[in-house]
Image (cartoon, rainbow, N blue to C red; front, side, top):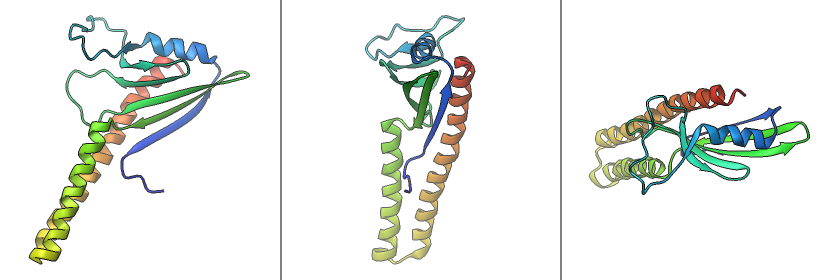
Length: 160
């Protein structure tokens, strides 16, 4: 199956119990409260992620100082096993970034079709197609880069 929006998934087994893994995640994650503007981190920060934590699942993202369209949302599920737990992580775009990528893909494709069928200028159609393809390629490359950053930080902090 071809994915139109970049994602990355990983699954691994931990020797820690599921409650221990969730406790570690809670230690490094700040709950999200969009209505409170006064939540700033102290200089010696021990919180590295924002998000929501459930009983055996979580949705977190790395804390950033400035806007980043390629920042992945980490959706995780913890499944208990007899001697540890199974940790499943899915890195994906935030819904707004997915919409933005889809919007510009549709616009560039629409302009390509318009220039081919109505205007009948294959040069402009090719330019629109290449710009759309370049935008998509740029998005994939930078999303994978940001996934590696979030992934290494998560693994380092969780000591998994």
